[in-house]
Length: 357
Picture: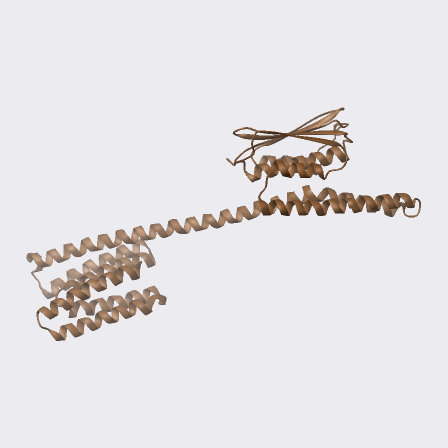
């Protein structure tokens, strides 16, 4: 902005000074004034990497030379750029101080050149116009500085949002790893330990345990591939749940969908999917259920998942990591999770808003 405004002011002052010198036939002034202005343009082009204090000092000296060689008197307007540049480079206080010094300097010059200048309308008018230019220059600098501060705050907030988003994504990935791979890998470890314990006493148990471990490994690999496909294609809850149910061994599973998931946040849909995955795992491994019913309901504001099994219930046992993770995921999505259990089954209910906020 400093370069653009300076170039515009330089151009106006140069045109006015050259025109005045040509009209009055003063070739010496044309050469001297024009040379100073060309130097100013050169400094503007090459001095952008200079220290602001050096750049400001050079400009003040060249502005003085331009004013001394300009017969039109318009070169005094160059000094309005001093508080403008000082404000942007060093802040409001320095800009105001520079403006005051420029006015005081003009008064001193007028007093030296024309001691009775206060009685001359031309000098008084020049001073008033210069003061108006200073006010406009400082107002423009304040606006530009304010925009720069707002832009800096926005960039800082954007960086903070990106940092929080990255943290949230790391947390989500950690939960996904637990929900999708944790149980399979735990099963592999348990079966391998079982095979190691029975390798000398019962070879049949070893074969069975290794087969179970191999099956759990295949399921873990399928789960990873399914997650990658969903990430690439965009998450849809109904096909994802039906694929999950189709790849699940054990109890018979019935799936019901009520309402349309279109327009629901991927966060909400993923939360319901992971809850269904965990509930199915619990029903198969811990509840020893023979039947499971999954019902998903969408209304304009909320999405609800119910997973009910006919197993042996929780028996008052404390929630494990799986249920705790499901509850935490639901809360972070703005919803809640409830578990109701009797000796004849368990029902897990997850409710989340369709859209964030």
